[in-house]
Image (tube, rainbow, N blue to C red):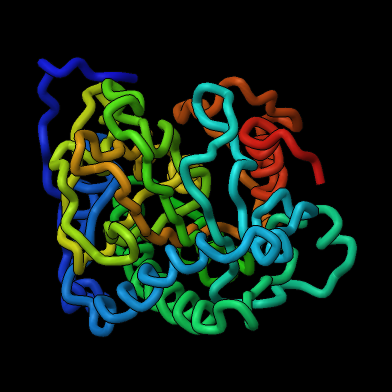
Length: 358
């Protein structure tokens, strides 16, 4: 998808819930959950005033440029080809919309809650992208492990509160078995995954797909349950700077097909609905396609971007029954009467996005 220079895209602010409201289970937040995540929502809402969040965000995101600039031989030691680069360092392994390998950003993947999610060798062999063990640069960047786990754990705990209120909203529309509740699914799961992202500076931002709003991260819909997302930090030569281009940032395609630019505060945590939750809620909670537009113009030259996403996901053996009313990934051939485990579903998607096999 692209935009001409004359076209205008609306800028919208997220639905926001305060942490003090969110932690109260007796407060009915269904109206705001529907506004953010329901059939007419953007599939995103934010939580403000989370104690301790701002410092933990800064602590981790400031490490991303240092990580990306480690010597190549050190980063190679942090790679895990067997997990299809879903643990440790990953750069140039994932395919973009165009089919080309993504050289624009580097990622560091780890489970912030469990270093070793399972010791079952058959599970590790079957689903290495979830059942593998964390890899930490304990010699080259020892601060990373603690900062990654601290921010990931906090965003997970706040995400569980969001999930509770999602369940309260969904329960007003359909009857669900307790095993289908989003909060319980996330509590029972061992395969949550954090992703520290570093976007390498463009050498010439005037020629980098100027008309593309997916120039830094292609259009996609998260396939997990609930994604926690920080607002990005921009830097140049390791010095933090404000973003010079107000048109850059997160874009979402609404349910009606409209494209909007989404903004939220730097001290707010954003949460986006993933495909798995759309499936399990029969569409009451909606996932939406989104992308990231790179800054353009002379002032964007040499600009770096760092951010962090926490993918809150079901356990690998969680069964997903794909309802007819939720159309997702029509290119996937769903056998077994439209029932897959989350691990099987992930494997099918990895086959699309990655060239490598485990």
